[in-house]
Length: 406
Ligand SMILES: [Mn+2]
Image (cartoon, rainbow, N blue to C red; front, side, top):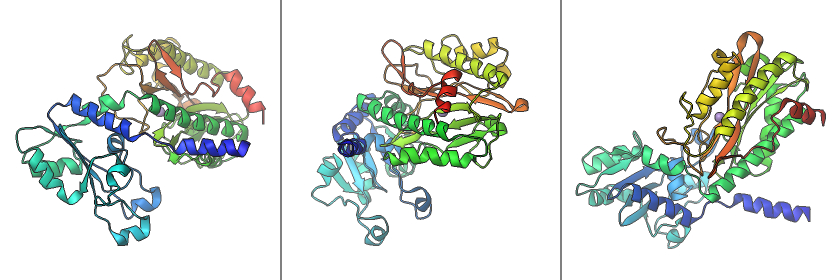
């Protein structure tokens, strides 16, 4: 019975975003840019980079098309949506497997695009669509921007803000997938807590954590795992993970999974020996107090960043300042999360329902070897916020209790 449940669960994990949702996204982008021609290029299959990291689609391209094969292009115009696929290359396919060709009669059904054609036709189609005065939008400095500018004979407009405005609001289905990657990441942290002890190396904790979410079917880490003990905990993006941890040190773990394309970003700081020292606990209480203040204030209409009373960062900063640790608060409070761990953002937009952000205050006192960061995944709701990662304890007493259970 358990096995059957596991199989059903694994199948559900693989399920992704539907063709119709991708179509809705394209419709919304076209509505935001009336009369425009929009071009995007997908990720290329790289001979060398591909060996280490495998192929993953470029996030904006994935967001609008759902297409996960390499070297594809996309053109959107008021009356047309065209997916351009590279012609099949049998030599390449020996290495990375069969790819869909635009001439395959199943192409529209497989891709969700009524019009699927060869990438060789890009210039011709673009010249036709952009022949008049229609503005052409692309991501700055992309291959699509360069090629479209050449074909249309004029510079492209910046697609960043229009597409960020869409990507920042998560659909119900996206939120479901983000819950899955968050849950897998919570499981990874709990497994690390059970294992942590003096004498263990940081990379062993990282191995335990990645094993948990890869085992659950997640594709990869959403970012390079940060497992930082003692003096390393004050280095914000420490990712060497080579130190042997000792009693009395803090262990900071900033580790999150990417599952079905969606990232999670989660940080906890725990005592290696299972008990905080009074000083560690004192600093920890300030960080969690700042985080709690920001979570309480999180709701539509607030800003994430900035220093004013209308921003979550400002509220956290004020709390840390009131406890005399302002000069040790080294980074801003958080960022949007979605297909990317640092998701595409238009910083001018205030918080709205459906946005998913991290709230991650940190205090780093190098001379005391105390680095504390607490980071949770937070969904903005109609009236407030929901902490998606609330299953992972945050309070010192709860962490100590969970660590005793090994
Ligand atoms: Mn983060």
